[in-house]
Image (cartoon, rainbow, N blue to C red; front, top):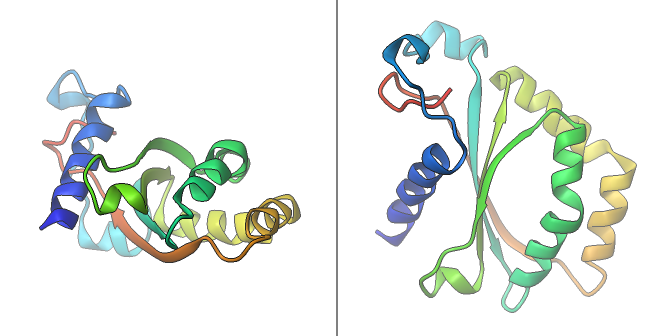
Length: 151
């Protein structure tokens, strides 16, 4: 139940906090067809939830603040927002964020380029000098509905 509330809260916050509210129904994206989604032709949002090892959340937050955002920008990933939960136990070990990609196909290319970036690899390795900081990574690709008001 907490997981579902976190996802819904994150999505709600993303819509309002990022200024993507559409002023009229003319500005909204059409509901994507299954064929368009399969071909990766629609802009997609990626909701990612990172669970840190015990006592390592601040290392995750620092890595995003000091490095990861820069490399996301470099590799065509648009940052929508980053959140940490307020309530325990997730507040002790969870970072949630949403990024956007031009398409599902572009997302794969973006991630491949990001992971291969030698500067990113150095930053990642430095942040893990005292051991791995992430216990679990979850990713969900999302497309906006016509009534969401997000582009």
